[in-house]
Length: 127
Image (cartoon, one colour):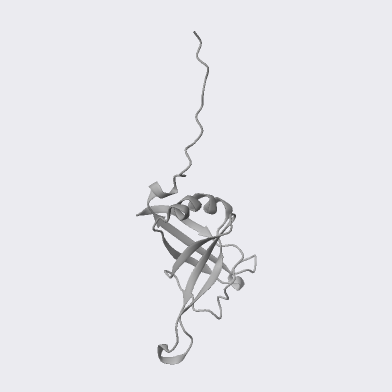
């Protein structure tokens, strides 16, 4: 596995950093939703004592456009991706006042090459 995306921020966060137990290094799963969105899901542990209950999958947010364009071919091929949280910044610690989660994506570089062959450049030959 090699680094496909060193670090990218998630957009439209749907998790609450104060309430949900999200930590650095937590694994995420990328899922393509429709034709234009790639969502990142995180598995949150049960909040019941002694580990009673089961973990639940929660949509953490969506990938940015440049990251989405890079990852969609790998998702279409069913390539194995390793996605981890690499940075968490609470809203009260940054100037924008919004929570931020950044992720890193690792995988096989051959998986991000589109399956549709690129168009050929044809130049007329002069006889």
